[in-house]
Length: 325
Image 1: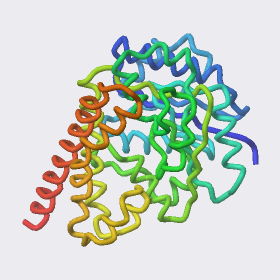
Image 2 (image 1 turned 90 degrees about the horizontal axis):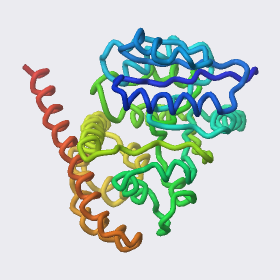
Image 3 (image 1 turned 90 degrees about the vertical axis):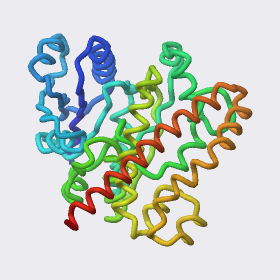
Image 4 (image 1 turned 30 degrees about the vertical axis):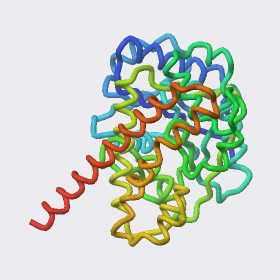
């Protein structure tokens, strides 16, 4: 089979800063190895403006209009326009290493049952130097080996239970097999739901490390709140969607004690119970990484996530009541 890949970048906003991040992303894609058969698709509600703003790129960009119905619907629209058998998403606030797409295609060759491939980046010092103090805190929370640096993430790899949307790659067969991404809620957890449905269909998930690939954290507390709230909201709907099944909780690496012994009607409380341990977890991280600022930062993040989660439970309850009426 010929090596081929459809690279998809979704750009919702077109502020000066958003365009600067998108250009940084496209420059890294330009510099990265790509097979002879490839395409780069940019999905946006502002396709005409982007064509003018990005006309200097030599990537033969293909533009697909986002109708504004949410991230899952936008992904589905782009994939249906894609030409090739391997689809690879790259977030616009990310950069890819030079071997990013080479490593992804090589991983799919290992086993035809590998349906999804995720990337854990090995961050380069030149990118880390550009981060502000808030972004540095985020990278410290992702370091689980107790060392205050960002290059060795082997301890994180074994805990991955799904492929995040930042660097989500999959066979087109997987998309067709599971029926695409969910379209509601319009934001949050679409990648978790997609990964879980692929897992339940017996597709294998692989996680690889790529030097130079990196997702840049949010730059302000407001952006972090919106991100975490959206993830919590999506996870709330995900929890209720699969509330009668045990597999999701195993897939998400939750405590066996909680999901094995709690009745299905009460499993939605697991994120609430985990929130009770937030002070202990934040203190542990702060002591391990020798940075007391992690305590308020991680507590803030967890509270934002929990707020979105509770909002989703309330919304879901209203939907159920409306259906009964």
